[in-house]
Image (cartoon, rainbow, N blue to C red; front, side, top):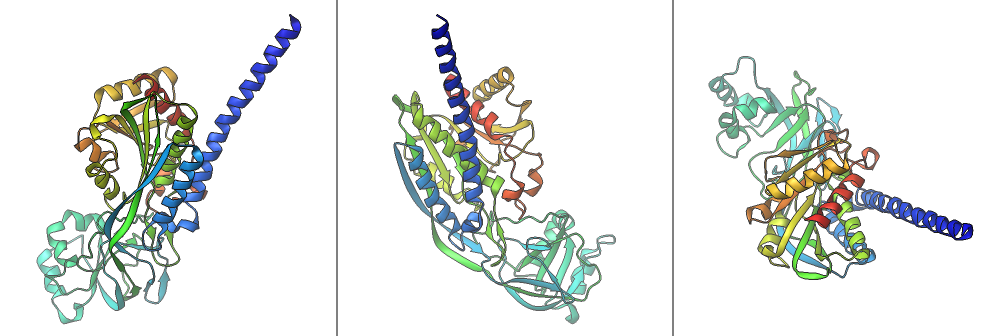
Length: 421
């Protein structure tokens, strides 16, 4: 009897060690994917150097290695403005660093030359005086310098300054608090004049700037969504897991935006979920969609909802994972499903995965949104306001600043939801 007991205890020990090893391996696999996608090989998973498509091909291989039943690529095209080469700016001879001291509005044309500066008097602002000054010969082809939020509050005035018509200035510099961000959402056209974002410590009394900035507009640029399927026991309904794998790409030849949190973190999560369900057959079919073109204004997910590989009406629930590489113990969510949220909240209260779920209003800020517009029950998970959140859309969202606290509790919360929904 004692011998049998020892054998049983040994078996339990080995089984426990295997489970622990599997869980550890999942986290190791997750970190490996985040590190790979945020590496220089993919140049910020943008468009100018083909980084997004290189990342898509990597994910295709990762899904196959995970053991999914099927994986396909769904192509679509976008028009997008990029900055792949010259990115130089100096102020009275002092060179500024792209991504640190300045960045570009995504719709800006290129610009080259030396330009006088006109500083907007925000303390005694008078629009008529400003435009009268800018009409003087000495300010023709100048760059107008103003705080971003001030120009935003006086949008009707300043749209004449950054537009093609209405004012003879050459461009605009908008100052922000660091860390400087970069975007792609409005890059589907080249519009108006160059708009440069600079840090709030931009000099307030210099005479001129010298710039050499080149843009390249890509017309009908081909991207693709990577769609994996794990077959369930039933095929009449399905769960869908989504994340976007593209990011911002380059700001010149030497600077790229790694996007470890945004959104290598979410992409890695759905790959490991695919691996889990490939080893543990689910009740329903599972689809794992890695979208491209999200940072270019949700282009991949918008294309998908108009060209779904499975009818949208068959989706029991869609779970979108975006920017979970952080450590806020309260998890932010957006959803159009009260019942779905109630179940997530109940599971979380029982299991204490997070201190709470903070439900926000639906917004067109990630790939769940086009599905909600079609009535698909959906939820977004995004870990906001932790230590990594300050680096969102900056050059510091990289492997060195990666945080992994959210992955395991979110993985378990999602797994439990799928079992109970």
